[in-house]
Image 1 (cartoon, one colour):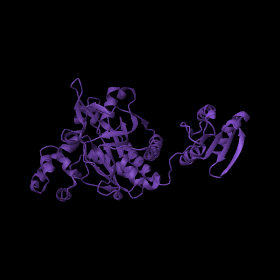
Image 2 (image 1 turned 60 degrees about the horizontal axis):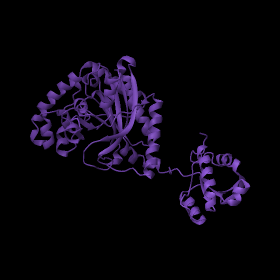
Image 3 (image 1 turned 180 degrees about the vertical axis):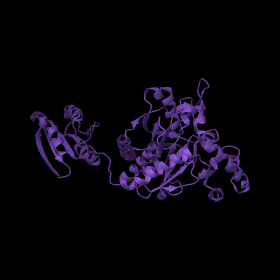
Image 4 (image 1 turned 90 degrees about the horizontal axis):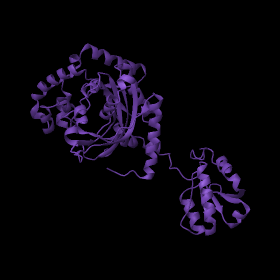
Amino acid sequence: MKDILPDEVYHWQRIEWLLRAHFESFCYREIRTPLVEEAGLFSRAIGEATDIVNKEMYEFADRSERQLALRPEATASIARTYIEHGFAKTHGVVKWYYIGPMFRAERPQRGRQRQFHQAGVELIGSDSHYYDAEAILLLCNIMHSLGIEAWRLAVNNIGCLDDRRLITDRLRRILTKERSALCDDCTQRLQGNVLRILDCKKPECRKVIDALPEWDRWICDGCTKHFNRVIALLSCAGVTYTKEPHLVRGLDYYTKTVFEMTLPQLGAQDAVAAGGRYDALISQLGGERVGAVGFAIGLERLLLASAHFLSGETKKTPDAFLVTTSLEACDSAFILLYQLRTNGVMCDMDFEGKSLKAQMRQAGKAAARFVIILGEDEIRGGTVTVKDMGQGVQESIQQERLIPFLKERSAGEHGACQDT
């Protein structure tokens, strides 16, 4: 788990602002769920046999001996919210988005920490294939807006629950014959959720997986028709995709459409976003049977891929820095500072009684555009001396004209000095 320092936070804010703008342009509304949930929620939703639940979830007992967990992902929490607050009866279809931290006790790598951050969308309440396509197009729009073009979109159809049971049974029979070629983890998965084997990245297992038959012929007509409509819409929208016959994703709740976006420039950990449809999850958690689809983006990896987009961005700097020529002027400067801030001017001053020279160095270090000098002469005359640090010129103006002056000169600078 790592600290995100102020200079880094500005880049995070830029990405989050862009994501919110895109989510809301597709009419998704923000939702915020707790970081801590009952552990059983995730084992029921994600699956007891998944690595997330078995190996990675931070689980603990509270003082009342309730088993709790730090959320390893957001979909289960949002599904619980949908059920608990009765949205099926009051709203039907909901479109929500989230941005926030998740937690998994996995081996830290580049772009992957034990506290990591995701942004995503969840649509709950519809079986329509249009929503599958909408989610994928939203994800593509985000990548385009960040100037990320070298992405690869993989899609697949894993069918309904009945189809998945058939696929699982047939894959278990095939893979059991290849047991000796599988890694130790995948050998154990043969007795649990066989589909987890398809997520394994070890070379010996990839060789076996790549030789498996495609399961299109094992999927029912309804799920096949749904998926074909989704990819037809993607083609009409001009989206390039690859049909990945063994893509399943690492969570048990997915049905029908699944998809994953990878960025080869990130190296071994190249998956930046993934999602799919989960039509059975709400009913499995005790709600009504309603369709749902969503995706999540890993923000750490998105930031790595967006370095070129953010390279021209600079941190916010003050519009002005107040400098006093005497200790006696500090009280008047403090009140002036408050008035400026109240009117939307980003500004600061020294409170440590430093010399004029030291205050000017501090203003330069802060990269303030203007230095406002206030001394005994200015107080008596009701004026201030304003120095434009960029142009190197200064002038004396009346204090009542200071705020309009700064707003006029700072229009368009750093997006600051706007009316509040």
